[in-house]
Structure formats: C-alpha cells, structure tokens
Amino acid sequence: MNNIYDSHAHYDSEAFDEDREDLIASLPSKGVCGLINCASDMKTAEKCLELSAEYSFIYAACGVHPHEAAECRGNYLDELKAMCDNPKCVAIGEIGLDYHYDFSPRDLQLKFFEEQIILANEMNLPIIVHDREAHEDTMNLLKKYKPAGVVHCFSGSAEMAKEVLKLGMYIGLGGACTFKNAKKPLEVAAIVPEGKLLIETDCPYMTPVPFRGQRNDSSFIPYTAQILASVRGCTADEILDITRKNANTLFKTEL
Ligand code: NI
Image 1 (tube, protein in one colour):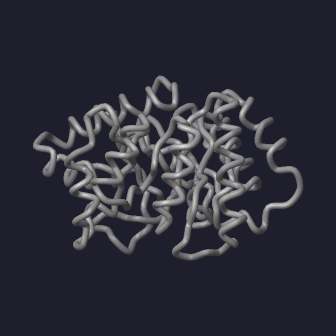
Image 2 (cartoon, protein in one colour; image 1 turned 90 degrees about the horizontal axis):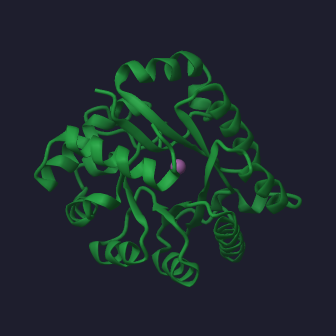
C-alpha cells in the first residue's frame, strides 16, 4: 500500500517541532506517497518551500490565510508571485474566508482572498480554499473568477457542494467526516463524483476517530478513507486510489 496522498497538511506547525524530521521520514513506510504542505502566511510559505525541497514527496501551497491577513505587511503579492515560480509550489493556499473566528476584519479577508485568486489564475495554479461560515461570500468570489482548485475541509451543504462542482472545483474531506456529528460532510461525501474527491488531514488538527484529541498526521488518513468508503459503497483502498489520482491531476504532480 502506497496510495495515501494527503492534499492538505501543516508539517511546518510547531506541533511537529519535537520530531518533525523523524515523523516525515517515516511516512512513506506508512503508505504515504505524497502530500501538499499548506502555508498560512509568508513566513510559513518559506517553511513549506524548505520542506518541499527536502522531501521529494512533499509539495507546497503558498499563500496568506484569512486569519493572518491583518498581520501581513509589505507587498506580499510580489513575494508570493516569486514563490509561485518555484517548481515545487503547486498551488496558492490556503486562502479564503473565516467568519467564525474573524481574526482579520472581513473587508481585509475579502481583499486578500480576491487578490490571491486573481494571482492564481494569472499563474495558472489551483487554489486551496478555507471557508468557515462564509459560504455565500466564498461562492460569490469563486463564481466570479472560476479558479481551479479545491474547497478543503468542506463544511457546506450538499447543495453548496453541487455549486462548487459545477465550477469544476474539487471537494476536500478529512477527519471531520469521522466525528459523531458528521451528518453534512457524509452527505457531501456520498454525492461527490469519483473524479472530484480529495482526502486530507489538515494535520496537526482534525484527527479522525478513534484518535480524536491526539495530534494528527498523514498516516491516519485510512480511518477517514474507511468512512468515505462506507458511504460511497466501495473499499477504503479504492478511496485512496482515486484521491491519489485526483490530487495528481489537480496539482500536476506524479506521486
Ligand atoms: Ni489547513
């Protein structure tokens, strides 16, 4: 088994400071063939590129998360554009809107999201979208610019998923699908076409049951695959195969 492609991880997080190198080095032996390490701001974007340079199976998504928009200084767009020229930067992310925490003012979140979508289209890169309790504004911008990409940790309804799919975008599902109250994500999991499903950890967060509460890493993905398989009427191994294929297609990798 070597078919776990984690489409969304944060191994730059301080949660991995104690054992980052050992843990990452162990992932291929646990079935991980590829992963996208996603930035939150320009500093973590640098770290993502460093990790991607160090490990052949790690690729980077660079961008500014809505939480960090208020703290972002200087002309980040020029810096980000230069990062996109790195062949191991395969997406702009994670970017989007978070009206649950509102760590940055909403007008600033919208400005950063829109600017980075425009850049992604200009650079011909997919985006990795974070949308928390901001479905309407997220959809409006996605419909306006029609970028390639994925809505990660998808938390909308099946109806919204259909809108996202109509735009040609992918749906990313993770550990939240295994939680007790996971009604909506499982309804979504059941209707996503085979060619548009991605699987992810969002590690160190969103650890699937039965390890919820512990630190997450890509080796726990089979637990998420299992629940997706149960609602789709296939095997966990088939889920891993199709999500691997889809991630390779979206991010133009060969992992
Ligand atoms: Ni994330």
